[in-house]
Length: 386
Length: 68
Image 1 (cartoon, rainbow over the protein chains, first blue to last red):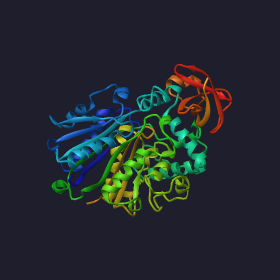
Image 2 (cartoon, chains in turn brown, red):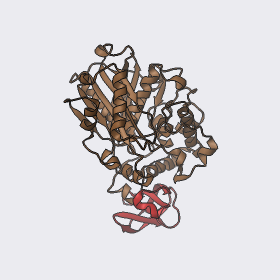
Image 3 (cartoon, each protein chain N blue to C red):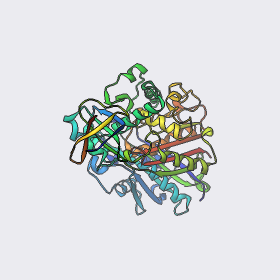
Image 4 (cartoon, chains in turn brown, orange):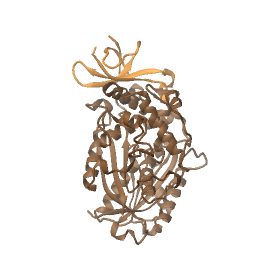
């Protein structure tokens, strides 16, 4: 395997954009990444698209060439990857593997989702297709209710409190307020976060990420060629993807995600770093409890202690190890197929020192964790300054 | 009918389209006495983690439990 670098990154703002379609969002992100990498479409040798459910959300399938040709990328392999909310994290992993193994040199990854043309109830139904539709989802569950059951058990086993969950929402909203491309730039108080409209007990509206439209893109190249394109390459130091059961009721213990632990361990080992070395992270806060559990599974804090860890401020932007400086899925927004690559974009922006008002003090080594479903897919990426 | 213990549970207020008219309703993962776990619905009084439940019926492939 040869060393791989991100040579360009670009994304759309995230939000509800009634006038934009899926392809225009994907093309905007792709164009920005091409410009950022000083690359021409003809230089892209392979194209990956991360997208969860274009067919259900907007009635369009065969999405990878549908997007790549619109970007002026012609003739090359063009592949869509679907792994629920980890679709573009997984696309990024496969693009990395293609460059690392030497199959191709310059590979683009775009993640996109267009969700807001559907009602919330219909969005819940489409997202539920990422669960086990022959079991848990037939009972009327949603992803919010699956994570509510995870939260309920975490509270039972470890004494995690509603305040701990709310602290994650407060922190991510404060971070997102500094991000000009975030969907919901609104500072909230702990009292507000505690008193939100109930969604699935114990989760309320402030525990849940947003339904968003948006696209994100990055371009990868072997490190040895990176400086042909940019003087600010960012290294992919370690990356791994892992899997687990789709149905929650098949898991021995729902308060931990084995796929996160496996992907994390492997990514740390290939990067030659430990959890303690990580300076900041983008963790998949589809629900507040998911960020808490990810901080445990990735070894930022001991098992069961993720709630107090967040509540005491360790993950705030002025804390020991900031988590979700972008605002996370909670505030930046969660166009599900775009999320994995958007996390990579935030790492690249922070590592390059280009994050403006939300720039972190320590920013040379960052980790992104992209989760699919209730933990059936996880991709962990560790990026650092080249 | 099967019986077991509640492993975890929630009450759903924001339901998917097909279940909107039933909200709020309780779902749970139940550890069955015979082994294994199943996801189903709880009817009647709210059940908490570690409560004993018994299956009262199966509707559309979904087990419905109530507190024992």
